[in-house]
Image (cartoon, rainbow, N blue to C red; front, side, top):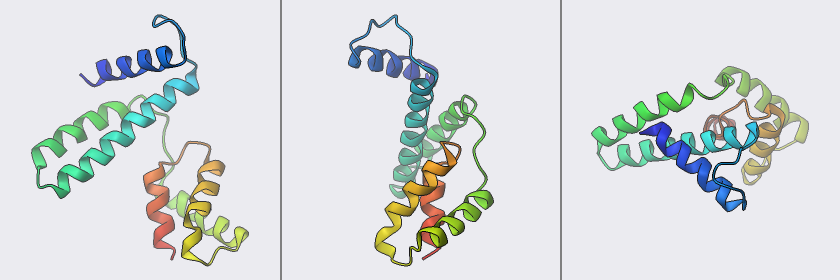
Length: 127
């Protein structure tokens, strides 16, 4: 079911880009599609947990584990924390209103190896 939904997303991407449905996506486009599906699962897990629907959250967690197999290894939270502290000092960010700028700088430096959710969580803990 999860892989079928990914294939559908890839086909939709091709059609949106005005390519043939039987066309090919670049590795970056495929990786972006998988990351988008992962983010959707993470959001769903959060919402189902808040809504007291553990059975639905569990299903999303299982789908998330399947999707993670197709992603490159992600950076550990400890490594993200080191980079976040260094970037915060480098950019001289002391104001909580500039969290978005710091998150963006970290995501750019980690080049897609860090999970955005983890980066945001770590950056928020610095303030």
